[in-house]
Length: 463
Image (cartoon, rainbow, N blue to C red):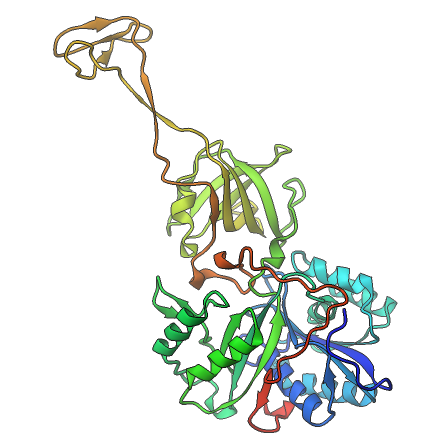
């Protein structure tokens, strides 16, 4: 893929990937990318070959922090070693290593990412990969890497540079706070969010949850992100950021190209005979037990695949899918997108459902006693194979049978997804079906002139 334009033949492409620099107590991998980008643009005059990539990996990994996002920067520069040393120091100083972060950092020099690295990235979207596997791939394909802590972030770092996003992708403009505001309340004008959401839909998404009257663009933790606006093109996202006009003075913003909102983690077809904990994918299956509602309003039922293997499936109340799930019946055919929850001493391995696509609904009937031919009152059974008798007029009919009347199922075939406030980063909003984007191998992606803005010269140590 040709992204950007080559202006200096003496420069060579450098692909930079890093992951797991944050912890639950703070820091942020995308903000570290923002500070490194500031250095590359203003100190090195690097030519960016693509927008910074924000790659969300398998969201079911239990040891992830927050959104399980890794970052890739693709630049054309001279003097790779100088840049590598600077970024290495940046990751070391700018990561929450003492608070649980285990960063990984990778560099690959060259125009074309090896196919094995791309395949590693593809699998990382839905499966569990080991650090050992990442090290093996890196060594065999001349990827320079560094790790800190236990180095678990090496997996995401390698997956980041292997993700080309030729397939569907979205963008996110992320605005960052100044250090003195970390941990304070983010003041976002709800009315401005609602206004731009109305005017820009469907080209921005997950701005505001109307059902719960909740702003979705701002996090609530101590991390340095002020807000993030997601959508289909960078220009619209930056103009939407401008419209927020926050009272708080910000450190700047950066536009990422991302797999968010694409369901990329659910492209793998599952086989119930082989499912493993923490993996994800989709499955076409048949309902074999009627759904039951358990404490908390969650819904459980069992499904069977085409090879007659069976698994328990769960729909959780916050998703807003429980009403639909509770109306399913034995024999209905559905497709589900799901993650696999590990078995415990109390619960079997379970498919945690992220979407339901109802493919086929069986006819369900209510059985009623026949009406009396004389007085039209419903008759009573005389016993098995003995016919029916009317209590009012004593009319008997030995050949009468029960009447089957189709139930109104209150459910239609089609796709059902969670309410916006329950979306994962990768969840594909309903309106994005049919809006998918694709880059050809030889396409050229020109970067929007305002994709990056910094209020001051950022240094990694100020993280």
